[in-house]
Length: 473
Image 1 (cartoon, rainbow, N blue to C red):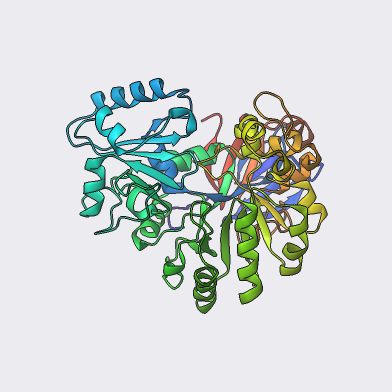
Image 2 (cartoon, rainbow, N blue to C red):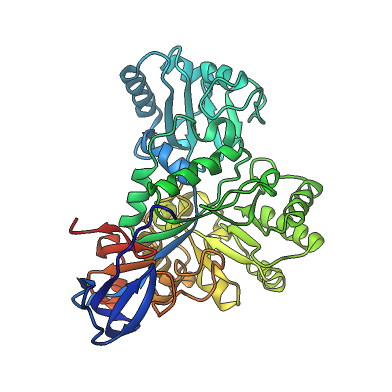
């Protein structure tokens, strides 16, 4: 991290593992932990009894999509088709000729959408509307023409991708991130880095299945400049398995998607696993249905598991699948924040038999399955503290409880976000001599924070001893 220039400092009167101590930081690492440390010549940060913990790691998000979402029309608060139409018309009227209109958060409340409806709402405008899942887009006719000819943001020459429905011209694209997912005219990534720092996040895994090396180059540049100061692990698709992402980023597992829209054949899935293995890589497999998870486990049985292999989401994991998960030694990277964000809709729309299996936490840990936390931002709320709270109380926005048996102890819920980037679900990192000074200072003791987990308890964040956020400016 070439941008990091640190000076020695000491955090005094900090609660660490239940004791009030001082913590000295030198050369980007924790140098000493104990009472009454010498502070001569060092900058002093007075914790005033607040907890000092390891920085949070978000083990599954999408940085470029987060940046793109900041400049997009947000549809999550749009309640019906009429309001959707007015929102798109208004956005169209505000933009100059030829500018792309990007909207995110489409769902069933907004009515049936195809390119013809977008053409009527924004005549002559390139428009792309992303489904709330992040897995699909609807493009206007002008936008479709642009991506077919390589002229659109994020376009790949001649790429079109699979379509949804019987009409090949309906404008739907599925699982073609490099065509529709993120624009080359991307806004500054710095606001994303700043937001993560304010939340106490010091490390992330970007779980986007990129097929284009330029995506990694963008992230590398953002980290090198300090725009995104967090440590970044990248995945990428199987076609990127052998691509060197450079010194600024850490290479993670290969992302393999078991799409709920169109399940891959077992041979295709096994082929992706083997491509990862040839490059010495683990796999991170997107599974949001029980059928998808069964298919993925079948591929793992064929190829064999390797250290670092992970199930992404594990949205629905029936108890009968615990045994193969344990036998294969797989980690589940899940998103309890979806319970808080979408729990009421799950209760209304998900099959009753599947509700107890949604975004499991406690039962996975009890079964001996390594489990890590993440947000899936921007497709889920980006605040890990919201996810921690949801893992504890399992409450939807209405207050209804979703999967009460999955409720966790608050310290264990925090631990979902404290595993090392290379070992999600592993032992929580601790503040002790010799570890990198990726630290978060809270405004009160840890027990009080966990009694009501909220991101506004974060007072300061450091990455490798470099201050990246301070509540007092």
